[in-house]
Length: 233
Image 1 (cartoon, rainbow, N blue to C red):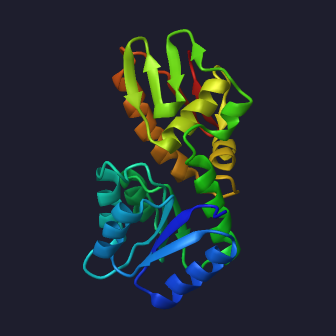
Image 2: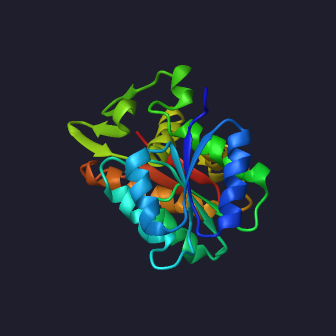
Image 3: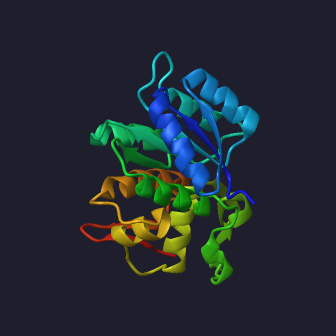
């Protein structure tokens, strides 16, 4: 039984083939595209469990493809792992703002790619794995709706991305206590990123904006500078 279907979109044929071979050896079904427009078309047709997407492609770049995936109803929740030779912070922020789930900077080791892939596929399940052992879904005015990645505050509902929901879920389970940025990175991404705190900051900013819209003025998510974040209920 295949572990999942993965779409690889990269105009570098050698890299595309290398990724395909390695992931197939791990038990995944892999489909390929070698430019952006075709990549988006294949994503809509094949409905993969994960898209591995190169940034620098001719005509239609990876950012544009990622944006189209997020705007399409049939692919909007598909996890996206971006491959890039760009390591500047602004490039990562741009991708996260669009809705990219994770980054991998070229050149990379195949073992690292496999770790990222496993972490993204694990998190993309409709209900986070941690829900199996923790059942706290309602505290005071806040209710978690895991099947729809939503948070309900009183009678208002905010629809979150899978990553935003997982962040909120961890803060919710630890409400009143600080959760460090490093713990969020490890628990959600499933690996130990090196000083990639900006990843959390971008997602927290998006999450806070959505929660604030339904909070009737209450600021639920508190930043503990130099430490992490706390959910005040």
